[in-house]
Length: 65
Image 1 (cartoon, one colour):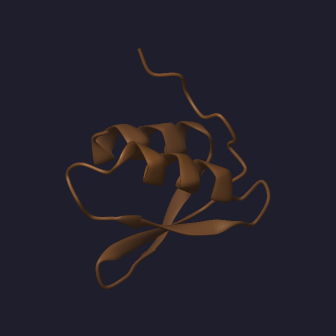
Image 2 (cartoon, helix red, strand yellow):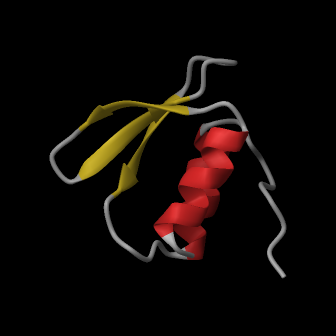
Image 3 (cartoon, helix red, strand yellow):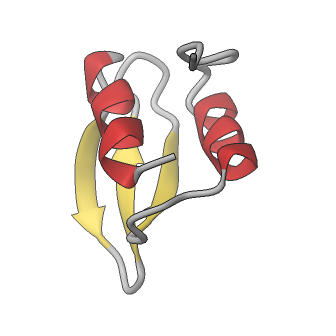
């Protein structure tokens, strides 16, 4: 999945960029206070995207067609 698409999904769910890390950006979900690192690669493996969604409490995420 493209990183831009994952970021769009996260921001539409209310998550925001908290800070830039070394090789990752740290996003936070204000609804539950959870945060997770998002790598700065143009493509992110689908299984990693699913793990990031689960860390934010966005289980299932958006279905891809």
